[in-house]
Amino acid sequence: MNRRSFIDMKVQLPRVAGSSSASLAAAAPYAEPHKRVQHPLKTYGSGELFDGSTEVGIEHAGSLYRLKITRQGKLILNK
Image (cartoon, rainbow, N blue to C red; front, side):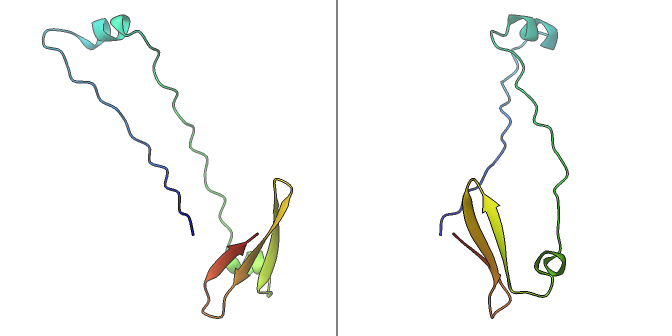
């Protein structure tokens, strides 16, 4: 099973002695990085999602995925 992690990292440049942040910003050859807008995560309880069954279908990009509750009570997603 492949797991992907997305980590946001901020790069901080060292400060140059005797320079102000205004002069650094004016001398920077690139624009300020785009800030990502954080949207609230839509959260569904498993009881609400499964509604008494042990399997639901999820259609994504033209494919059907099956989300199942295993005998051990864990979730598994199959294509």
